Image (cartoon, rainbow, N blue to C red):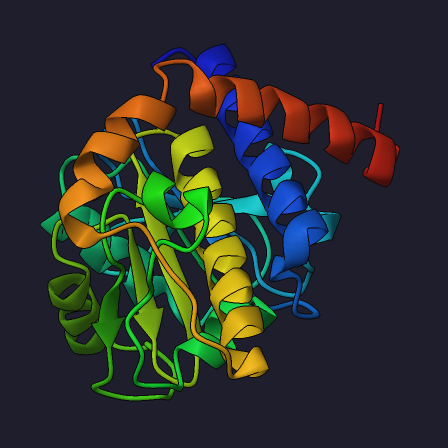
Length: 238
């Protein structure tokens, strides 16, 4: 990939970080997003020490190889870098991976209730999120990263018990939107559970058909453009 193409990709990745911050994934300086290096050297990971909403451009990402060795970029490295390297190693289809601690999805990870399609956001996910419960602590070793990748399997999202979430995609927009959809889906179901009233959801046998009906080919791109415009207004960087 040409240098200007990588610069463009990292600029989009920075947008992804700011959008996550704007949409409820902010947690002080925690949370990170990564991009598989197009030349196969490893992953570009948000640097530690700044919040998702403070990421401005490619200078806020560090290139590490699959063993966690820094190859390029300045700034501290997030302790949970193995999340990204091990998922990328296990899933060649994944180009972007993210980890964050949105309030509702993190709370949902603590209850033994399966996410139901009470809103379209849960349908957009393309399936029920995986669950990871081996530890509630940091995923700071390759072995824990492997276990998380195993739990994720072929899904787009995974709920990490009492910790947060992980989300992946074949491109930046897809991965970020999966993270946003999961948080919104969990928020909706928690609100219904809090009423104590009976509620309905799209039947599991109908999910695939509904997904095909509402997940138009250009949906992610349209949503992504909307959130980028909103992020420009909120963060006032342009």
